[in-house]
Length: 378
Image 1 (cartoon, rainbow, N blue to C red):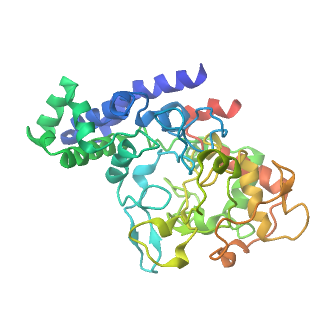
Image 2 (cartoon, rainbow, N blue to C red; image 1 turned 120 degrees about the horizontal axis):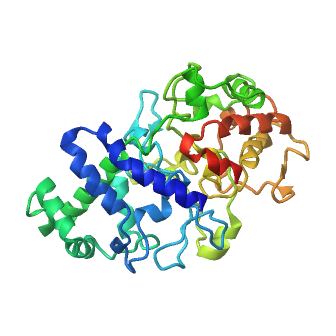
């Protein structure tokens, strides 16, 4: 019931949120919103964009399934992906895929950056066989034509012949959804941390300790999870959008169900990347709303936030405690891609003790958007 309440609140504020978009694109955002929630645009009319990006769950997938939500289930209610569905809150803040001045790959959508822009990303799930499973763009256009409101909107926004070319229509669909996703509904910047920056909230002792650890040189969080290296910066995204291989193990429970056997090479699977030194790298996600968007890591291998934090201690200590996954009481699994683990990055900083992990988790909970704070109590 609580999730449904948050979901309804999200919908109610959408129209006002879109006022932050230029008036010339307001109608496109409205069209994008309708497309985002339309289950008729999947093969069996069973799934929409919002099925995997539920507004009441910070635009992540909170549906229960046979793998604990580690990956999403498809339109056929059977197919399973191989990666955890990332939240698309704040996705409009991710830069287009590019190479920066240091020669690093940065930005792009999906965890491997294969969609250079948000509009490209919005197109792919419709035709993905384990997601919305439409056979081709022409079949998707046929579904669009079933809705008179869509016909009027596409004609007004993109020209009356737009639906005659299915590929152009798919591009227009992606642009419309991306415009909706650029509304304030997706990027509210109103967490306890944001209020703290504005002088409207006093962090608890535990949150403050976590903040100090996060921004300090003692723990290496800031190496990847800060866009702006200055403290107390407004609209910090808590990611630099770069790609790294941190030696994550295979999610055996998922692989036992989805039949995938090949290693997930991450960034190397991006068609724009052909250097094998990038195998196993994934884009650093934003930490905003991280406390309410479990499971964690690119394959959903960890269920608990503190487990995800403690995993990094594996690279700093050789003690039994540091080599044990607290969720399984067994050693951490072997890295899926061991060749390119960035030890020079991971071995920085001091050990993450359970006390420090608890404080860091408290700070990360303070990065939860205000409307999702009730989810922290569940």
